[in-house]
Image (cartoon, rainbow, N blue to C red; front, side, top):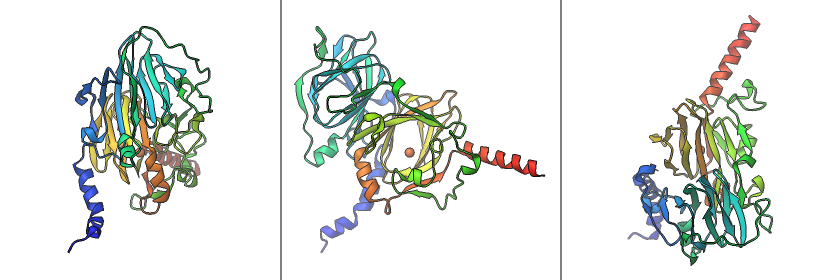
Length: 358
Ligand SMILES: [Fe+2]
């Protein structure tokens, strides 16, 4: 007679089946926008409601009309990236100004509201983990008032430095975000340091610190990035736990990224077009596409086929790091191949040395 234990033995296969059947990407034209108490216009991207099998995480796009504001509410931690428009947010009674490509982190339980003070609709990409919170009995959304036209701006103190009174970063403007570009091999990266990896024996990066341990430097994975926040790291003074908008992954025109495998991520395209090979499947993307790296160990590579730099907003839910640390032997972070351009450069440098010797 079957027992609970038979169900447990079947759990892995059952989840693989669910991952296989789940949706893998959504394009802007497929997004269904609705009006809610909170937002004049909001559409879900990668989330269980749209057919994805996430780890309880949700990404979405919201729009604040000109002269309007969102509702006031609170819930779990939320990370936000402004796509268009300018305005400000009030977070626990303090005003934080933002502009296109600003990034914000709303701390867990902070009362917040967003105002569009510009002359174009303000569009923002945001990520939360309501389904994970619900599973843990932690999801509590509290609505104080609804979205509407702005008649008077709130008279609240303005944050001068983007930090709250507890020393936590709330907003970072794009010009203040550090950039790492490794397009030509990265600063200080000599061709002989570039790793050639046997795809049959991928490098194991047990933790996010594994990059450093393995001598892998920025630029080997993608051409570069603009860095925002990281869970567990004091990057730019942010302290995210539940959700991170870590960076833009940038690849040069007609360039390929490295091949690697890791836990869950959402990728939202804000510039360029191309495709990614995710778990052997080709996913085409363009501006406004959001796609899912399912985890716990999804092999993938990003290829920019356009004439401009590709910029992907990289999102990682915090629960990933909870498991990444403890499951590093069972589900290690793997590196299969560095960026092909670096390997070509390394080969060219070797040919050059060969020529000098002869
Ligand atoms: Fe990745």
